[in-house]
Image 1 (cartoon, rainbow, N blue to C red):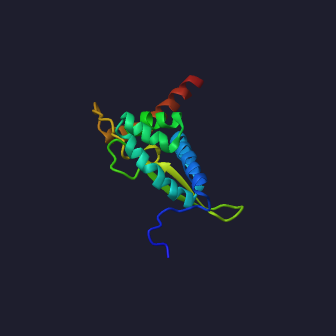
Image 2: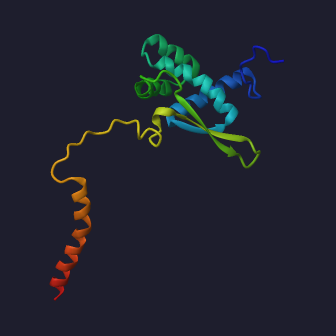
Image 3: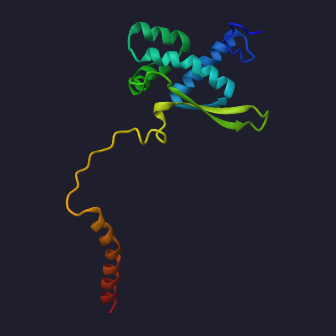
Length: 162
């Protein structure tokens, strides 16, 4: 029975597992999305989301806590400088896991884990739209004028040819 055993060991010793998750977290922060196995993606999600929550408040203490977990100065700086302002209003759920199918070599379940706020495809509808003020014609008259414009050009070119 596995009562009270939350950690997925991923077939590794503790030091190897912590180092691997720290390196994967640095890659995720740097590239905003990485491909890995489903089990590693789930373990990485549990590892990196508390760090992103810490980065929302930029204090020396929080920087030291995050640095003690991922141990790369550039990744910590990018987390606090670029990632934290984008996720500032989000109450949690900073990452998304998308399953990709099975790997050819060993048939392992593969997944892509990404930072939610850095995906432009999914966030197109959530970005604020620019307010436009219409001047002049209505949409109906614009549609009626558009097909007629090329016909005028053809007549003008026929007159020039003669």
